[in-house]
Length: 117
Image (cartoon, rainbow, N blue to C red; front, side):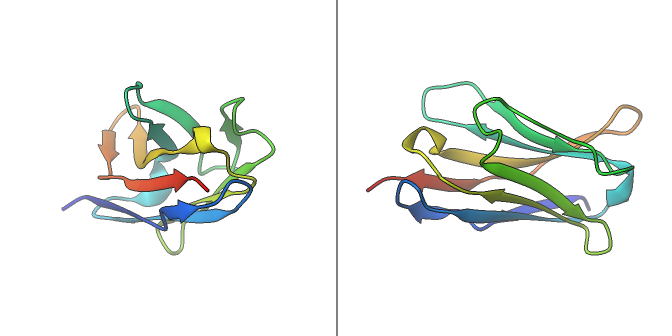
């Protein structure tokens, strides 16, 4: 059974940091592109960051470049998102996504990040 379980969300003050984790199971983690999406209240889900397995290439939404870092540990089947200098506009539910052109994709249930003073 495929599972993606996010953790690490919570309430943080502007300028603070959080580290999100996504524990994967039930599929070959290293074969998938891993991505973080987020969805703010009243807005569409947007891609935040992605990382491929081979070479660890990454890309980021312009809004988070220089503040967020995506990484993965294929030995632990875990995806991470380190977030620094958080802003109120980063408030959203953050979702973990596993994608393969040939095998399809999977979604986690999300973890809520709230940036507020």
